[in-house]
Image (cartoon, rainbow, N blue to C red; front, side, top):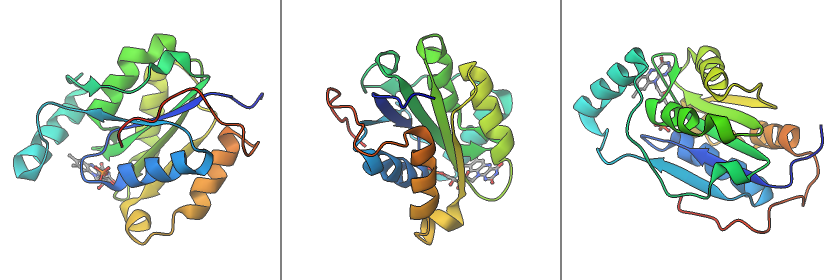
Amino acid sequence: MTAPNKVLVVYFSRTGHTAALAQAIARERGWPIARIEEATSRQGWWGYVRSAISALLGQSVPIRYDGPPPESFDLVVIGGPVWVSKIAAPALSFATQHAKGLKSVALFCTYGGSGANQALAGLAQVCSLSPVAQLALTEAVMTSDTFASPVKDFVKRINPLPGNTSSTAVPTGT
Ligand SMILES: Cc1cc2nc3c(=O)[nH]c(=O)nc-3n(C[C@H](O)[C@H](O)[C@H](O)COP(=O)(O)O)c2cc1C
């Protein structure tokens, strides 16, 4: 595989684990990073229930994405938390909306302890692409701050050439 020149990291996170992982991935090569947002908060008990229902029904949810156009990148790294063994609805909705323009993808997720493989397989299916690399880390790993090594391995699989970064894209909010 030729190393991709332009790589973008895009993620959704409800409670911060996936955000921390996305930031660590982007930091490795200085890749631009963009967050998928929603108009309605998913915090609290009701937010949890709504999230579970969205995932169970495979619902497409309204999202706000203010990052650079993913279609202009060689490879997009997409991630989200696992919700009832699926990728969280906002991340899945992003992938669905942009699937046609994606050239290549790498996928990641954080999760409590089960369903990560199924969730990443579902995300790959929506992208209609076979990911060049996948990374699933538990929230225990994220909170114990032991994720540096798996992140390095994941990034190497995406782009084995240090310093081969995008110089044109402007980083967006994390
Ligand atoms: C509605 C909902 C459903 C979840 N379902 C699962 C699940 O099926 N398997 C699992 O291992 N963790 C599950 N989790 C836990 C999250 O995947 C985990 O806490 C993740 O790290 C949260 O990421 P975030 O902090 O980026 O939002 C669920 C969390 C929520 C809110």
